[in-house]
Image (cartoon, rainbow, N blue to C red; front, side, top):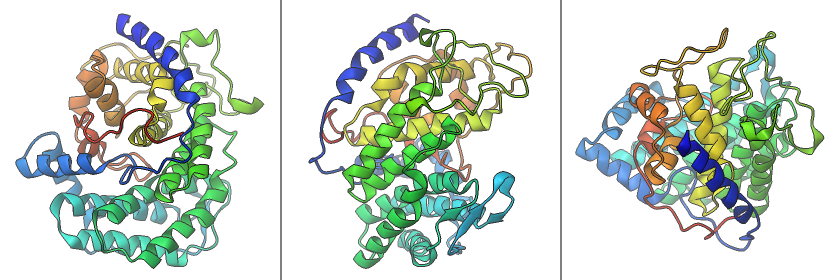
Length: 394
């Protein structure tokens, strides 16, 4: 608890400084969506040397159908996603294809087998050539957010670590991101934090890949507005911070009348189920990681909440033994590695409860949304390749 208190003070002091700097004329770092070139090279070296946790994590990736060298994409002109996947017209296909493109891009850099790179390109080109009708129906916007969080990860690796992708195809893919995704994302979502933070992550990633400071800034602004409202701290007062801009808290903190105790680290959807709560957590962290790859420390602005959320959840997971609150469920999720690498490996925070859980959760896989191969990409990679703070983002 003393460590958490220290982090609360430290991050509270850093946040105002991080929010005032203007880097609108500074180029983006590439590759720089979740991963930088030195980080990719380190992962490659660790896999080749049989170093854990990358060795086992990559072996898991290679056995996934997403890494199949005969993978066939299933693009559609229009994606229609209704509530509870009714209808599901291309929704799961699109998420699977975006995740496969990222998977194949990682496999390309780690193995040097150009078939993986060409597969990733084939998947991305297929969608860029066909998707024209956008994302419609009730879950269309969040579908756009999940997939647009992942597409640029794949595109960034391929574009900046190979010369296989034709310039005209890159331009077509960039246009797809702008015309088929940004309109579904740019106005945010007043429904709940997990949707709006996924939108923020997607806008940040699109901004980096397209070298578009305006879209990047929209994503950062959306993140800054929503992040404080999805993880509770006692310092917030008796109830959580409301969503930004006077939006109604239409996603309640309760589920079927069950409220979690308001203690440090509770997530907005903790009472709903562990997966949705951690989709929120993952989007928040992924966006902060990409911003950090660009020299902007969003982590510092909300680090106390991120640390509290990790330790809160971990206490209820083995080998920790705290009994869960009545009618609230906790389980392992394919995330936490990116945040743990930042706060533990980079900054030296002990995080004792999450430190006990992380080995039991490895290697993390791909959830077909935006939590993808985190052990491989961020397990114990530390600060390698990170730019100086304040060096290139707004």
